Image (cartoon, rainbow, N blue to C red; front, side, top):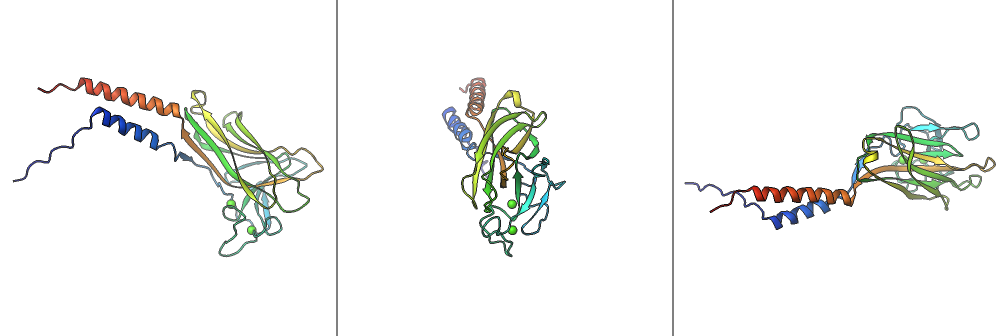
Length: 242
Ligand SMILES: [Ca+2]
Ligand SMILES: [Ca+2]
């Protein structure tokens, strides 16, 4: 004869609290990844040492000008970055990911309106790797990274960067804490060249774009408070045993 298995005991309120605190604070470290189309600029296929100006249908929008032409996607060779000439297998460690990079010349813009929308009480971070080409005729690039609302393209946060060393990719990012005012608005990201001197040609190369969202502490506090109130109410409503 089998004895019925007794149900697992319900945790007491202090136990519940400990579980809630653990669950609440275990989450934020990872952050949620927000999808970006073609984040490493590997589409379209571009020959070694060549580029595609303003290629269509690759997830990014490119905005050029009469002076600098269109920005676009480039497969650097050794002329642009040491070790970047294509090899099989791809052992190059100069280009952060794959073979292609995005490129941005004087006063040009690269933008993507993401399919995701802002949620309140989350901190959004737009990050990428940026590099300055080897050739001496290319001046040090200065650009802005922007997080924007995707409907009006109004900037929400920006970070200005001037690259200091040639032949090197370095990480850069900009963050924005979204509140109730931004909830539901589409997210857009942008790289905008600030190089306005016509006599100095500049170009920044980009790779490994990522966007992440991390819940803010106050959102966690609200979640925790709500959970505690629920637990306390449930406990008070439980009929007392005799
Ligand atoms: Ca790439
Ligand atoms: Ca290459």
